[in-house]
Image (tube, rainbow over all chains, first blue to last red; front, side):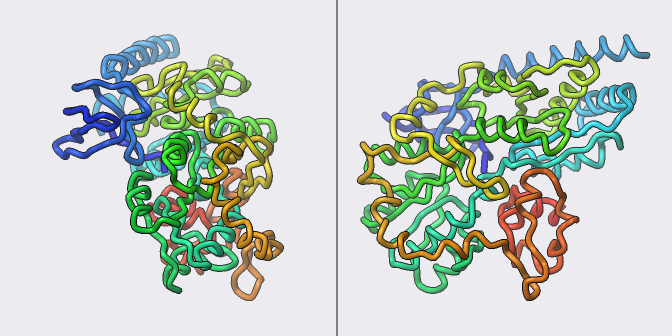
Length: 76
Length: 351
């Protein structure tokens, strides 16, 4: 039940916004988040529940990739 | 599988071999259960890593009493709207779907906004509100706009705390739910002395979470780590989280498999009692014989009992249920874990 989809806001319409999900546009309720045009959001059951940060997304894999390599080096 | 995933998998195998012993990891979100099976992750893991499904599917943890209550309200002629799978969960008086076959008006919606749209046509409509901190803010929003809700919402974190403290099963680490955490943030998890990694739902997210937990096991650390930083921050979604408690207050939560866990339910505050279906339809609820709801669900003339409760607590797996794949299938589910597409039995059956 916690399935959610990431999308990009293309237009703000008061308490809702048009969100583009990889080409498909849908009107989404944005009353639970403060968003502006071009923000990436994660949408669950018709509501944007959080803003997405693509920069941080890339960082986590980089950090753990490095930490994993260190571990492998230590143990081999 | 991409290089990145293969690299993580390789590291998981190295680390698991260094640790040597059996490592039990519990995923406490139904969406993770489904992602793990869909991506075939179990078959890729070393033999000494065991993934166990926990109580993270809101449909699966809904009690028999709650199903019986809403089915009786529907059969009394009150139109009901709710999210997907819950309509198929059988109770002692049948499921909402069976109530619909008998003429009750039961609608499934993707969003609570659709229920508000239906309310224009059916002014008496009741929305069956279920889910954890992720969907509770949406119900709070709709109640403030005048939608009548039958709340079976639950708070996830206090329930996880209870599960950890019960110590029925030795769990080395927990994969914590990504989307509940977008709302509650990472801070609450720090109250628990358990290895926890909050994870997203892609294959690499789950693999990374397993790797991060193994690393904690190897280094003998017990910390909360956030793999899903692209969506989860330490504070969570403060606006959404606060909105829950403007409308709801914590109450006893009735969990399938666990029974009553204090302060894990969400009941509508008196201020909004006009929109509380449990109060509005008290006369219907008072007439229900709930003693039937407390009996275990049986099949084959009462000889075989559904073990969904033990599966939810991670004590048993679907193959240990004598009904699994025989009388209990996704087409003819006996218990909720077979109904929900994120339930442990349903996922085990399909993959």
